[in-house]
Length: 463
Image (cartoon, rainbow, N blue to C red; front, top):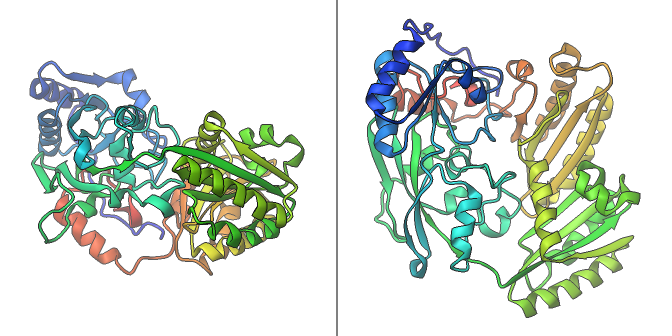
């Protein structure tokens, strides 16, 4: 939904040097940046005046307390890889970096649970879990950069969601610092917790507008014995989608099942250079080695019978590179100046219809379209590219985008702009159709952050 007119927040009345000095005293030897060094923390064209980099939870608490006392607006910062989500910040005085909070605090492999600080990267966490043959199947586009806190704050889901679940399915408890600097806890460290309100769910996907996640207790899964990917290339989307029933009927349920336009991803063009305009169907098979081998044979037979032009099987190394490339397409990690990334959530059976309607709307609006569909979960990602003469901020491109969005919203409510030129965001319904729960969301925001200092204006309706 487009932003409602938010309450106007008075400009900061203090000298940024005062904020920096107060933070240096509160954080003692921890890092505080001011001036040119803050440029690296620019979010959608808005640059903070000060950056604080605490080394522990108490430091985060102290920094937020100082910000609250001075009325400084705070943007929590992990690696910055998900800062394209939402609207540009209405105010941005302080970047609160959590990159130095990256420790595993308590790990119980026998109980399949771990407690970690929010600044830990997915790559570092995956490496630790791999030592015990375990995993946290939350896929991100840049695992060596992306932090767990960013994944939880944005509720980022990857291409294995249908098989394994979303962030909310793995969080047992959280430690959060509120807008005043008060440290709170939700949930616990064990899989079975006492009944009651699961307050932790409020923070997942809130973009840091309700509190700053500093620690998370997670449940884990055993890593599969082996994985492989079965690929098939079809001339038309209709042929690819018609073969899904056979893959869904495999005795071993695919960990991910994706249809993607070959020309959408450079790595796929290298894999199948003669088929840029074709559709690639990918089945990710994971489990016991014998079961995976059998499923791969069955999948190959089913896809061949469906009319696939080319069949490929990826080994372990190629398999990992392939899925990383798809995650980069589906998540707002990179964007050319005249490009917009949309996500449409529908029923899995509707993915083909989403793509057909998007192609028609894009052609009508004068935009080029590339796409990827998670056919198991029902999520479709669309990248719209402005044609020659459209730039990142001109009105023609914004009008074209709005036409495509309105065409999609007539059929599906959950159409989200995950990334686009920041200058166009206030003109577009980037969060999809108006939510009937918006008044409740506004009440919760006012209760948790009455002064509107945490990531102000970023979330739905400009909250």
